[in-house]
Length: 199
Image (cartoon, rainbow, N blue to C red; front, top):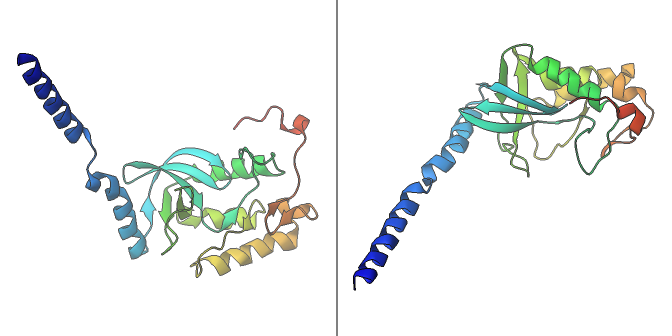
């Protein structure tokens, strides 16, 4: 009889521990709700840089949470995608993005209805000291306008104009004939060209 009572007590204790260790629904959804409120206001959100992933993706601390941020409406050559080779100008885009995001106060702006991509990454316009990083990457020929999934977008026409400046000047990605396509970038670096890269 004593064994049975002890077993019941252990089960009850385990149930209490499991219940109190479970995260509440409010805790799980608070960061997303907080971001949605900011998005609806259309204001910029200050963030702290954690890491640079590549030419169009960074990790930041936003509202006390670590988030991967994918830059809205642009695409830079790939260097870390396991399904893609290392592409021309991937290193240059990474280095330029790194230089930009470290040069001042970093803020994000969200687009109504385009908050996250299919990988759960935040989609945002990224600014440093009020200047658009997307715009700079486009003007300097490190990025193309892409992923126009759910228009309208606030800065789409501006980005297209900035992209055209690089196109007309045949700057960087636009200097290689048939390199930029509607689906991405066409061409890979050879292994010897990649040796010594540090990301």
